[in-house]
Length: 271
Image (cartoon, rainbow, N blue to C red; front, top):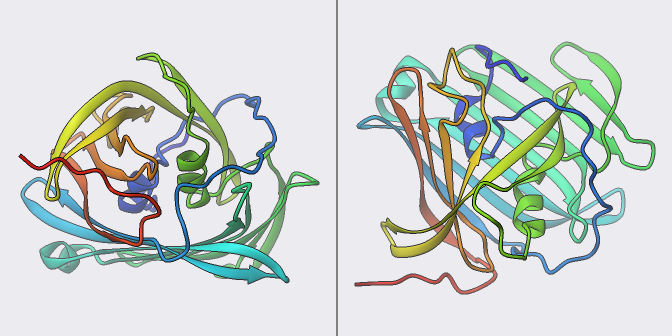
């Protein structure tokens, strides 16, 4: 199981569904072309609250791009601490993922972070035919190659993969689904459990959502193995509306604060 270390980018990883269980190789079918629930130009802004404090802000954006002459979607993730939190612990996290715009499999991933004095700057090239990840740790000037699981995702592409290939059929409460991921230099098994449907009040109005629970490690950071809850809009966009985590001390909440250029109508119910 992935250990929560001092240098784990807690704020951004929480948002990107990345509290994960290491497991056995999971059977994943080859991705096929699908109607993706997003488009170039999509942008989300999120507020991260720790208790009563507005601790951080994160954004996700999409642009059309090319990589080695191949059309790709370029996802950019950015997270930073704000206000008083920035005085105590400065965070500036940059993530980039270049992935196939139809199959949603990553080709190139960048992680460039500053977290309270800790820095990391690495790039990963994915070779899905050979099932290899070529990791270039630019900070340590070290290059390594690792064997990866079939159709592995990086932590940013996983967000869009889950939105695209979320099961279309009606799921049963308690049922789970999972994907393979590769992060830094390790393979992980990401699992989400379906908790049902719920209408959630937000700054935009009432929104119908599906509710999930990633499995996390209890102990140092989280109260229990199932302390993180995720609400996603129950529409064609599949937008993460809210994340809530019960920590060992206090709680953390992430809320959608703003958005633009979503592909389908955002269904909001106003009283």
